[in-house]
Length: 343
Ligand code: SF4
Image (cartoon, rainbow, N blue to C red; front, side, top):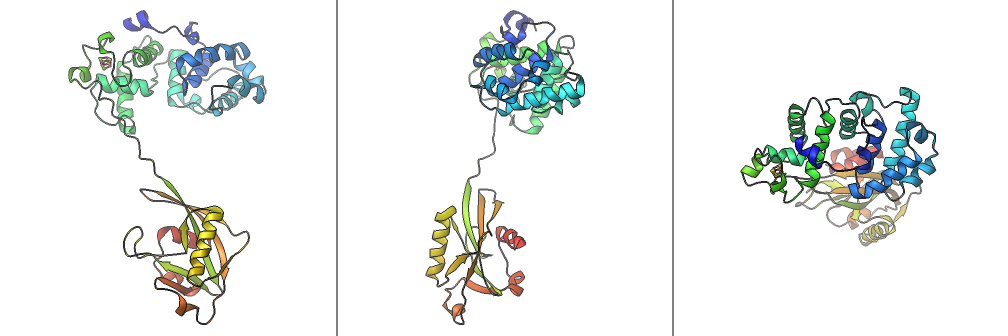
């Protein structure tokens, strides 16, 4: 706290004492995806147009969005607008004072709720964001993934236990400032840190390798075109190769690709095995199937085909006309079972 009193950043939303919950809220929402330096001018301009909850609640949405222009992520402005209107209707124009009620307002998450309650209302509530996670992971030498719910919970408990009871809001802001200016990502500035003598990561020489952040791998989305080919009482099925994804299982004819391209490719593929198809209008369905390593975004078309007496014998190996009554006997691959349930 001594360090904060001597070094705190001079920011336009910190000038009043006590702090106005609406102003804390606006600044925190603006800061969510925008740098502090960029937010300063937007914040000042916003307060000139909407100095309080009633003025924002009374504004037209077009005007609200116009004043947000340049900050991006416009849903933040719209949510703010919706929430202040709810505050006018439900709470008589005053930001509620409990976490439970604040969290019900549109666009307010745990962090923002904690910031408002501690900074404006002096409540002993934590506001744990990426900065705080990083600082605490270093102080306590926590080498686990800080993005996991378990570690976040542990750190929140540690922050709660350490929080200054007299000045909980300043304590939260002190952590934010320390994280933003000293205990920065990458190589922290430990020589300027008030906690360098107690910091466990520094003692272990691990200050630049902590925190560990493991994000879930991005799973690619693969578009797939599927034809459910029906002729009279038969469906056309294909057996997948005996190796690889969904090995040896049955499926409706399909190919990788989407839209006109997918349809043309699959039509040609079927023509090559002697099956001429025609799309049944208005029968398109979208199905998503998630594997561990990719997602199939399937566009499913019902198509009709001609099947003459010799059609079975002309099909190459791995293809079969299956009577509707026997479909259940075939081991359909999971994604194609989903399709079956739509037929
Ligand atoms: S000593 Fe270094 S790593 Fe530890 S809290 Fe301070 S700046 Fe962060």
